[in-house]
Length: 146
Image 1 (cartoon, rainbow, N blue to C red):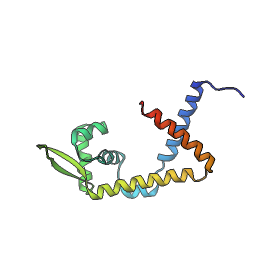
Image 2: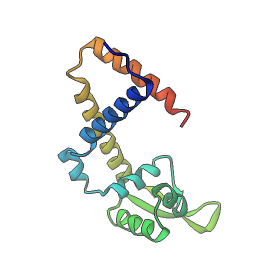
Image 3: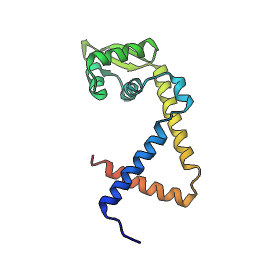
Image 4: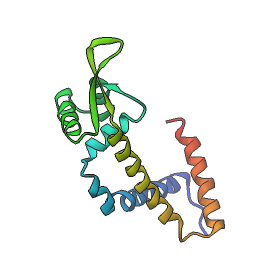
């Protein structure tokens, strides 16, 4: 059997990652549709998981303009998922934070993702799963350098 070069292995690795991403994310389960959130709204909510943020910081995370981010936040406020509040350090600044309903929506989002991952692991036997976990641990360490 021919030994593959590092570049050939890297190319195959990239193909497999793209294939997995496509299969895991391109057809969201019906449960995600029930959340009635757009991808930018989900990304905005994810950015607020660590605590309230200024609009400019959220805009930077989303890679969007301040006016576009404001529109996203307006819709999330209307849904009761986020709330605006004055910054305790500077009353002129408004921060955006998750409401209890927003936190619940994010928990549901992560729970749905976790169920997809568990379904992916289901057909693997213990030895195969151990191999995958070892490889994923290597990838997690490699990602620390990105």
